[in-house]
Length: 179
Image (cartoon, rainbow, N blue to C red):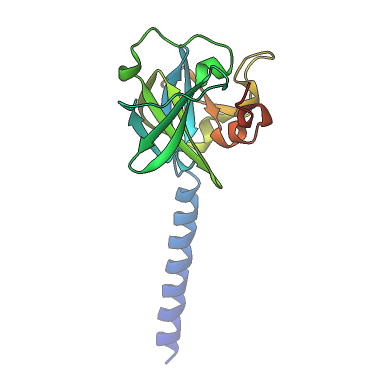
């Protein structure tokens, strides 16, 4: 009887150690983001804030009396999606790439869905939490209000600022599209 109780204690100890190892490994769970380039600057957006990545639509309806960075409205699988030139919104010039070669990050926040025109979407990048730095872009950087920290890996010495679409969609200037 005592042997059975001892074996049960050993089993419980083994389970506790297994859970502790799982928790420690969970701390190294990679953060995932969509890596993209806009106006020659590289960013990474949290994967949970980007609904999808699409090519520039073939058909676009321009809106009269709207700000120049609002390119128009596209019908994407039956959903009307406003398209915004992200570089133009922050007063930067995009690349000279033809529109049909550029990509659109579709983002949704509550009831707002919008497509953000960017130059290139690279891929999904994985970063370990230890590579996060709470450093911000330099003062006066056009994307400063829409970023939150950055990732720098040991192998890549390039910084990847974290672009937060949710911060962009919360900006009253972004929501005011009429002239």
